[in-house]
Image 1: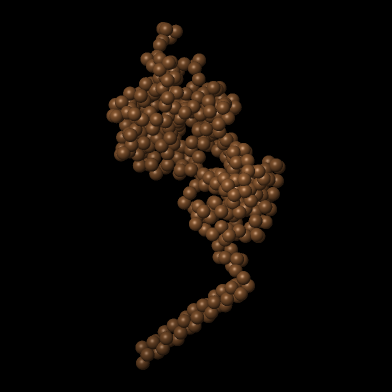
Image 2 (image 1 turned 90 degrees about the vertical axis):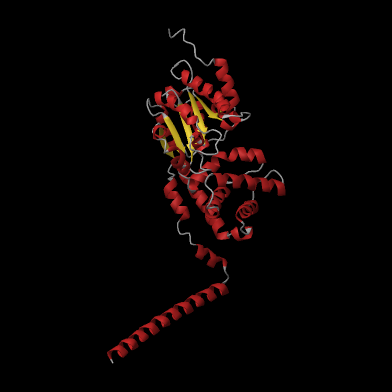
Length: 380
């Protein structure tokens, strides 16, 4: 009976749906389309652990925009292509479901679901076929499939997926922010408990530096300009300090790309990027004067810290948390301002501070004197 079993969704139909409405991360990785994903080994390991389970085998990645939720799914695809996953996931396919492409050209929810349901059912039907590779569906902005997400073209798809998730016939990785997960997914307790949460923290300066090193080769090839390690660390520091509303590593990667582009625009391809291009792009993004970003002492300190980090990396003793504290400790904005001032300005500032302190002392003495006089009057 098993030998004569035929799926309701044919192989030809399923392949057409996957080809038209999905992005195959594993196929793209084999073509060399992605930069190496670094700094997310623990989160990828946790995702693999969830996928290996029999029951709650679905994961949801929770993090702000720009932290690297999609990059983690790509990192999983890279592990699969490299063959460094358990046998259960060997030759698996990581497919991003492009809901926008699927909804394109539809005029009603029923027409949209007529595309989604066969894809979902076809993948679920083949889950128990051990001779076929596993299919892992990645859904970005997964909160949009919830019925309560007003304005979403995809709302209500969670009800379509829920039966397959209940019996364990789908492997799903979702991604959204923690706020949107709480707002739209948490109210549906039946769906929420079918996903295990993986929280992605924003990388610190040292982790961002290592991520920039991982993506550097592709950007150097694209622009025809090289960028040294100390420039990467400088970008990670400046974006961390001056772009507080945006997240790492996205803001550092974008700033590096823009600085390389500025160098090519002004000086052409070839050679190594200079500090001027980095300061220009950071200043352009933040509204700061690019000349105010330069501090010769900080540049020398940055070069020294880069050499220390590289020595730890080569020795295999790099501790990202400890080394990050070493880099950022002692940061004092007022000290930086005072250092930028001339001797006269510093002297005037010190005199003003002393005068203010003296005035406060006089006020305190006057208050004590007035209090004593009032007490004397009350006795009389």
